Image 1: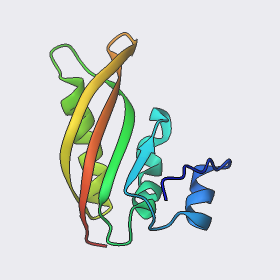
Image 2 (image 1 turned 180 degrees about the vertical axis):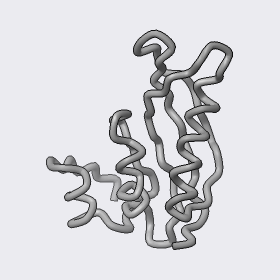
Image 3 (image 1 turned 135 degrees about the horizontal axis):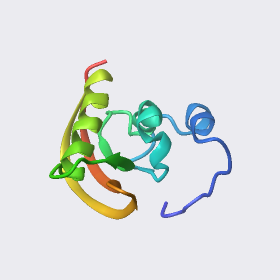
Image 4 (image 1 turned 180 degrees about the horizontal axis):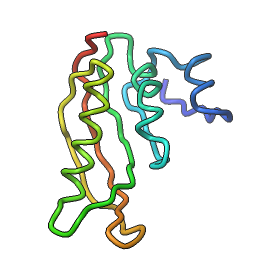
Length: 115
């Protein structure tokens, strides 16, 4: 109870070996691989499949395009592919990472897994 245990290793391997169905909240701080690793974050959520995923993304937004909305679209597309129903909780631009490239953070509550 109330103990934080650091675990060193490849996140995919660690989740598969030790962390399936245990997390209320999963942090995904590596924007470059976030969408690719989303299935593993979902596996780590509680056994009832519900919980919060805190995900960072790098997104390119054209002039007049909202980087946060584009990030939501990308995340929802991936969640739909995985058969996941989710609710938006939070989103904001963290920083610029290049011309019209943004680091965005999103919080999403996973409500239901259909697969």
